[in-house]
Length: 262
Image (cartoon, rainbow, N blue to C red; front, side, top):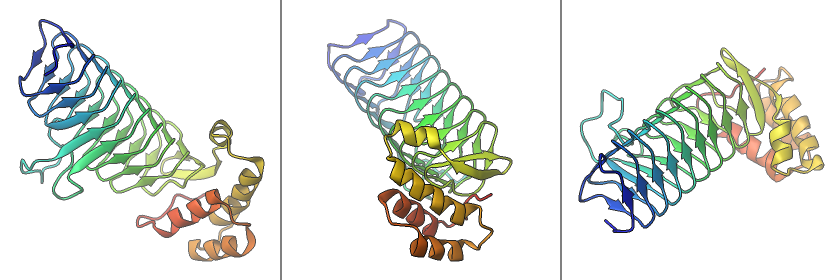
């Protein structure tokens, strides 16, 4: 443990935990022996960091955040598994992040620059990219992949093994049981594709030409009534190629649960 840290007198920090320079630990927080915390990370009051948990630099955990407690999976048998978190994430009040399991990839991974709002839950074996927002009380079940810059609305429930594509946005209170395509706006019970995430594409600096190609691809893939395999063939034949269109097509082709449609 490096001496240039600020630990409140009521916090309990195991002597084996590794805290980098500039880490702050608030009142009544508990940090276990296998936890590694990167530089300038701030741990608020009443937080718990347990298990084989690694946090990068400049993360901020607010009151009651719990990271690294054992998975909520009855098959978990005490095996060593990890939580690996990048840099500059914000974890608001009472979020929970569980480590992986032997039945999955044995780790849960979050990237950098994410925001998990109050009471959000990331279950075992999830892989979450960079710049992802998970709003209040949204829950990711196990084995979920969330690509970069996706936004998951409040009170959304996401089924196990679902994938959420890059720059997708899911409206609040939705039930997500199939893969959410990249660049899409999805909402509903169950969630359906309503169109492009136009605002997200604008903020990400996607060109007007790329958006036009995506519009054409989306009409065929999600609003034409064609079978998915036929729609993919039509897109490949009729829509000019672009990195964004290629990403959508590859995402659809790799789907195992099926893809949300109209």
